[in-house]
Every structure is written in structure tokens, then in C-alpha cells.
Length: 323
Figure 1 (tube, one colour):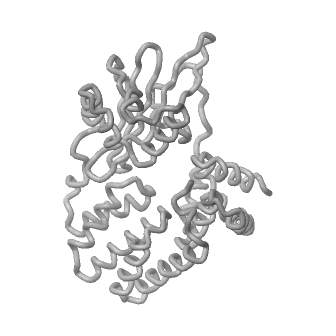
Figure 2 (figure 1 turned 90 degrees about the vertical axis):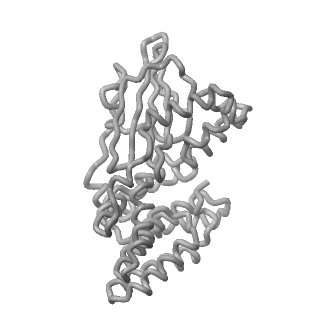
Figure 3 (figure 1 turned 60 degrees about the vertical axis):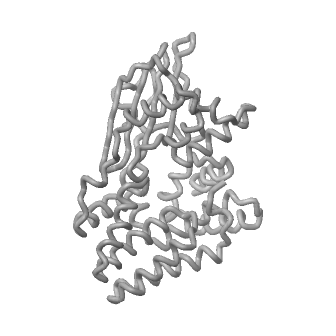
């Protein structure tokens, strides 16, 4: 269930109002008030990634305007080394450099392949539980759920999924600016795709997928989590023969999502979170509001089509299908 699902709509609207107050304060030339409003939003820990990232970026800019470069650098560094929206990450990296930060300090200490080998070495030495240290919180949670569903949630046993000792690496791609990477391995006829994201000074595994041809030559995908399949560009040159190409994302749709006002983005995201809440009345209100927003919300809703929460994904599909 989405982390923001426990928030009341009133609380979410109050946070978005504070965010907007901070934006207005910056426009009015009052960076101290802007920083205070953004700090209040971040302190609330709303579980709304878009809102939190926007608040941290604006706070960094407000601190820089107050001649507090070191504090500003910390906010810019955080955003520039985390899995946030590409436009926010890019802007944070630019602000970090402009504020006197050294771009080289944003690069992870070790490349993904070195982190992979360190993790496997720990597993071989009987420290399977340490494998969690190389996973994002999202993947860790999903693997734990999968293990429990299969009747075995022991971290040491789950770590065995990462011990392909005889695998041969056939592809590697790293995009430091975007904070993403991919390693592809082959072993005994199967293909293993490992997707990474930057988390501070570390690369961490965000997705893992195995593919094994069956007797008919078909190549079914075995994804170890509920996360959506990797995009086309993540296959690189390792697309297995016969694997179907997914439809490429519409750049116009992405642009429309980015162009939404921060407060509206936050409201849409909050409503989506409520779609997975235990409270039936809350789910109904959120669905009604998203339906009222109609096509305006569609570009942002599309990223939730494969949400790990099946109720959220199903409702989003229904909303997107509504004329």
C-alpha cells in the first residue's frame, strides 16, 4: 500500500498549501519564509515523492538566496544523488555546481559491477542478510512479500536469488546524470537483467528479472517482484529473440505531466495514494476527484498503471479508459 495512503485529504491539502505559500514567498523576494515553509513540508514526511522533491529543491534555492551555501549544497546533493524525477535531478545537479559543489563528489564510490561482486561475496561468506544492503527499500519490501507468499521470508534464502556464480556478463550501461544503470548476465540459457539506481554515494538494485526460454522456444518473463517490466531502452542489445517490444512512452505525455503545477501534481499523487487506502469512503472520494480532473490528470496517472498495489493499478486503468 502506498506510503501516503494514511494521510487524510485535509492534511495533504494543508501541505500543498504550505508548498504554494513557499513558492509565493520566493516570488515575493522572501527566501527565509520560503525555506521555512519548505522545511515544514519536509518535516511532515508526507510520503509524496513529487511534493517532497519539489520542496527540497525550492528550499535549497531559498537557502542559497540567503547566502547559506553549505546548507543549500546539502539539499542539492541529496536530490542530485537520489531516484527522483529526471527534471528535478538535472536541476539539482546544475544548482549544486553553481553553488560551488564539485560534480565529481556526486558520483557513486563504486560502479554497479563492483557492488554486485561485493554483494555476492558477502552471500558466499554466509552473510546473506547483508544482501538487503544492496537493494532499494522498495525492492527489499517486495522481495520480503514475495518470500512470505512462497512460504519462506528468510533473508538468507531470498539472497540465493542473487548467487548466479557462473553467470557471464553480456551488457552494462550506466547513465550517471540520470542515476540509473543496468547489468545483463547470461547463465545456462537464462538471461538476468539487474536494474540499479543511485542512492547517495551507492548504487542499489531496484529491479531484478530472470528470463528462461521454455521447450517451445518462447521466452516468458519471470519478474521477481510486482514492478513493471523494464522499458525498451533497458534491454539494450540483449533483447532475447522473439521478445516483444513494448510501446515507447509518448514524450508529449511526459511533457504534459511535467508541466502540471506542483500543487496539482501533489493533489493527483495524493488521490492516487488514497486509492489504495483501507478506508472505502476515502477511496471513493479520491476516485471521484480524479474523475473530475479528467484528461488533466491522465499524463501523471499513466505512471501508476503498473503500481505494486493492484487496487491502485486497476482503478487507474479504469480512469484512463473513461472518455
